[in-house]
Length: 349
Image (tube, rainbow, N blue to C red):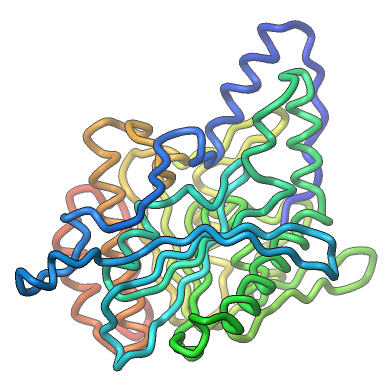
């Protein structure tokens, strides 16, 4: 959970426009390539008979929910698989976007997961979503500061838990495998995921407990530290579910008044509790390479990292839920050319 950003004074219009450009580096997937998918790309679809391949691998639904208790809208996008591979029950990944993102972002993940038999529920956080980028550029810093407040960090985690409540009570709920629910997120969404997975953060002597025990594993992409909270181990040792950490050697976060080095992602991994944790560090890249934005981090590297990330997430979940350890070994062999560091879960060492 990030505390408020340090204030910065914008002395002229050029500084304001520069601030806007820097802010766009922080996972605003909605500013780049946004895919409103209604069916899978051919490359995403599982192989099968000609008749099977005529059917779209998934369907996507934009759902507009509202949490009346908090008086807060919770828009979501649901990617629902057309075919299941788990005895008719569908595992679920619930995804939290980075600051300035939306439910339409990270479609390269949602569409792929659904094409492989996982439902993917992408939650939009209205207090820290794409609306931050609109309006007077001179107000951008204050909007970013507001999005980083404790209250918004708490609301983001509650958005995800509320969305889980809603989907499990919906027409899709009876088909979801409640023992195979995964939380995932990028950047600010990775912080949200860690809170849901059991991170312990205190405010004014009170422990903020946002742990959702329905979550059985977590995918943590480009996680910033919990700023101002001291040693990360005190916050993260309480997370004991299996976790997959994904980052890059140039995964640097830089927005007005705020900087986070790539080494911060590694500290998060080292501090995380539990033996079943894995780490993949891609060589090069950027912080926003994990969004839908094309080209960032390198025109050639960008699509490779996306493909490797998609495959790694499913290999990891296969190792967690079905003990298919060989898939992680195969992944590391296939993508070793773009991976700077790979740490397998303890069970494989």
